[in-house]
Image 1 (cartoon, rainbow, N blue to C red):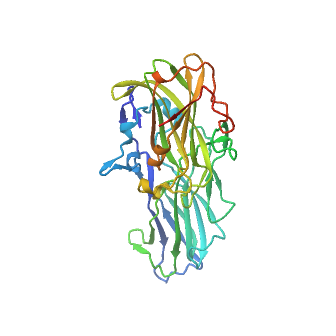
Image 2: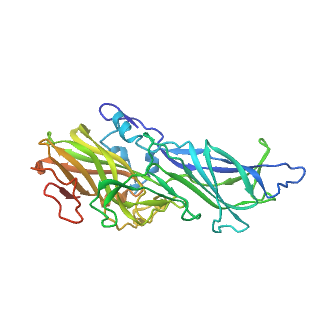
Length: 391
């Protein structure tokens, strides 16, 4: 997404990858009868379907009225934002990790072995024994600086792959004493999983492609995002130079530490995610000039849920509180951490969206000393210069 110097929307890039259609293609000699001993060579095609953020964030605000995130996103997205945060939405992966689990003659059985492959492009050719297979696909991570926060645990169990991130050095006021520091945000992660795929000798369930002289077995698999984008903006009305910047640090609490790549169900451990923020002056908010502290972060979403399977707010089973922390710098050289309760907004945007808080700076005093960014509010009271707002 690109904006001009006035932060107006110019173009929307194809921002989210939310679908895939996988085909199994098996080469076949019709005479003599097909006998490939214990299996055959099979191609997997991975043509991707692209959707934009406004299609993926398909919330219904009210009956017949759908969510328009661009109408409430005043922070914008310029070249500096792209350099700091990357694309505002999801980016197209070109390399994938493929895991194949052979379960013999028993479908949906526990995994006892795995065949691991890395696929560049949209097709893969490999050997498949006759019987049943489970197939897992997720994207390779590619970052601007070459540093990856996502970790993958494939050793604990062959029946699932766990994706997670680790703690930063930034202290967190939430989820203590189990976690006293915030966690790195994950990168964009997409996965698809098919179970009980039968590769049989008599080609039941296959169809013949006369052009390629192949029998094809089609699988309906959906490549979905299992990390969720939130766009945060703290809008300052009547600032008049009182706050002049941010320290570049933001945090969102009450989200999951991990997710199961196979199912997309987030883990049960609550953590706080640390991310970068930026300060912009004189942004246009429906004709009013405002200053905005904005940023973009990814999370694994709310605990114990696959957000892609939720269609209505009534189905969100979230008991955590969600707080947004942003450290502001005042014109006298002091800084303070502003804390906002954004629980309702996170729940309403269960698979990502815009989180907005607004401050009338005429009601906020200038602190006399710095505080808030280096203390743990779990074990002692908030400092005087830390502002906590309930919205």
